[in-house]
Length: 546
Image (cartoon, rainbow, N blue to C red; front, side, top):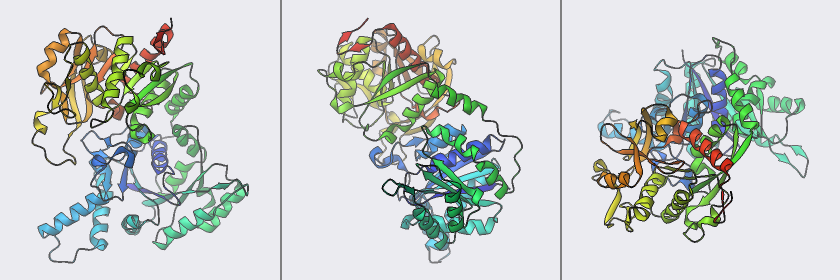
């Protein structure tokens, strides 16, 4: 029978439930178990697809086209297992399903209530993945914090499930905070005690207590937490602040959290823990032989989570190249033709990030021109690729008013135009071109060399595309269509034939980069940045230093 681990959080948000859940998954997976993780979010939005990145960080896209919470990115990066729409459920989706059933008459005239109808739907979705028989363990992260009004239906659903499944088939891992008061020079357990008390008021008790802390928990502190939170002392786990999130599985392994979880679930693992590959990644990450500085040009740079997958992809690619990658965030609204050289000086490569809307687009175009003219490695993703095509059309083809119809509907040169199947779409949520699509790469191109294959599949999230009416002109001038969808001819990747490394892709490669399997385009981009650095051509305040 599939076993279930529920990860809850207390005291405050942003403690790292997703990282703890992913780390437990890694350690169980290392023992030969089949593991997946799902996330339940308490907000009313059906999915985060229409949320501003400032609200909730990046919107992560799965293979099957689900727009999901960014924590699913952590799950996939850590476990190297693809998630699906079933792995992310929101309160909005739960209520949408229940209300639709009510309108269809599925409840046979009964009064529809939070209990049992909402909680039954939550339980159904929790068990859905486990019932496929594909996994030995399903880890379920509950968003929000214990005590939040919106989290109560989820806590009640878990309480019911624990009773229905039995204590050896479902356990609760509660993540909480043990703050250090510098004035008193001591750690305080009271917030954790209150958090567990709040959980207990709703009928749940933690089986494992994971404590986020800045200082090590001594034996006496662990004993106190165990005694007042009604947890075995060896089930009080320290989650001390780490230099990188990728240290967390190792730190938890040292405290034998996997063995504790397996014992409580009465689950025997088929093999011994094998995390040598993970340790190899950490060794390369922490012992770089060189470094490069990459400019990240975007319009949401104030919030790191807005570009979470891109930042993590740079970490993976840096480790593969035994190189520390420093990121310089640059707001695209701050860039113009006059200050471009100064703002981008000293960089060894520039990535222009994806996004929507007209804000900051001209700054992105200016940055791309700087890369093209100074032969600086350039990587454009989604809108970043589209801006590269616009810049090339304006400054090489001479089409000075070239633009995207997203920003300039009346442009005489719609180099980027809305996709044909998007023209009649009226609703915003979940209607873009989403999920994994085939792409055929041109043999001998740079992207083909990076992938080592001519046939790939990548994930998408867009409504606009390169207008193929201009493709002949672009290619004649040196912008190569290096990747196309084999079914509809959509240009998926472009590159310049007379530039050391200038690549733009319509898809989102950052969604498929993994800890132990970094994405080939990011790996190749960092290698190109290293070559550029070693060439001595780094542009410093508009003066090339050789």
